[in-house]
Amino acid sequence: MSDDRWVVLGLGHPRAEWLSRLSRWSTAAAVPVDFIKCISRDEVLARLNSGRSYSALLVGDDVAGLDRDLIDSARIAGAAVIVVGANFERDWNELGAAASVPDGFERSELLGALTDHSAPIANIAAVVGHSPIPQESTWSGRLIAVTGPGGAGSSVVAMAAGQSFAREPSNHSMVLLADLALNAEQGMLHDAREVIPGVQEFVEAHRVGRVPIEVMRSLVFEAVDRGYHLLLGLRRHRDWTAIRPRAFESALDGMLRAYRLVIADIDHDFEGEQDTGSRDIEDRNHMARTVASRADLVVVVGLATTKGIHSLTRTIRELVTVGIHSERIVAVLNRTTRNPRRQIDAAEALASLLARDDRIGDIGEPVFVSERADIEEALRDGVRLPSNAGKSLHRQLSSRLWTAVRDSSPADSRGNLEAVPVAPGSLGHWSREA
Image 1 (cartoon, rainbow, N blue to C red):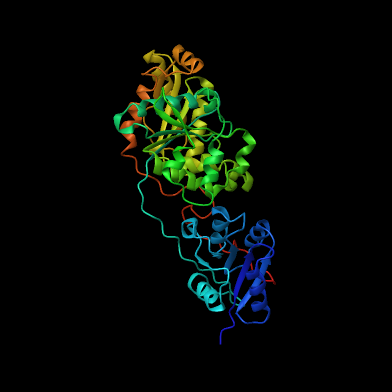
Image 2: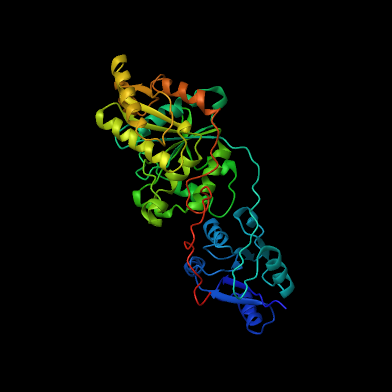
């Protein structure tokens, strides 16, 4: 006779009757469940990250911390999420929950949910099993990431690209310029008088459910003169702490559902936990890392100067380090002269530096964007950029965008990287408690 039991975490309102009922069943051995009652979301996360195996997490539908990130954390730890309650307005399966049971669930209902969606824990070995969440096959737009070292003009290049694509009849009202940089400046460049709503509100809307397209479009501004829509960025650098990783990924999916083309202005820092040993740094750079890994093309902007070309090369090298294929990278040399000889010299210098790194393949010829005094005037007056400001870049991106092959391996360290062999002894050992 097997003595395997389900090890279940519980999180709900302190006076929730189902918590007391399940505690009594567990104490009296009325159900084969070892029940651990948690008093907060933080305690749940701490237990899930402790290395001990859990079968499931039962969480009340009225818990304020019930969102995509909590559910995803439980799934990564191998615990199925079962929602307790009758809030039918929210699609729990879409959020990632395995099942739901009513407040007044009977023992048979609980055991049925645990049997169908979780695995019991043996006395000696931990058995982790869960079924992947079925993903809906939905239409998705294209994504272009624009990045570059400070002062290179990547934000203006992103604006010029957005305006050029928005001029195409097929892209009418279907181009979104999203400011996803930590030091967001698109609001200033567009002379935006409003600072709300922005990316924080957009991500928050996706934290607890699927957002209709009309609601997403109500959270962005229309840049009438330039023909695209604008999603304002963070109001302060430190506000990245309010952007929860799984909610942001869902928000990015929402952008691609609502628009045919999304141009994202992102930072050039892609360091993660694997590089630094710090989870906080990876969370801070999560927007840039996620967008770069999901983008069909990554535009890297630099200046055609000695330092500018060096910084451009370093950014391209960092992109390749986090798994971005060279075929998806487009180099842009901004504010160049129209002198062909100088352009050739700059292109040769860039190619020479890139050739020193065997990991970097052929990224093609760089795109030259000439210095224009009327761009600064257009920014100052808040009017449309010169019509040919992004002409050369638009031509290059158009020829590569719709033939680009998407990379399905995001640079996320939570299990989405390519599988690698496990070194003997690297998994540690079971503690006495386990």
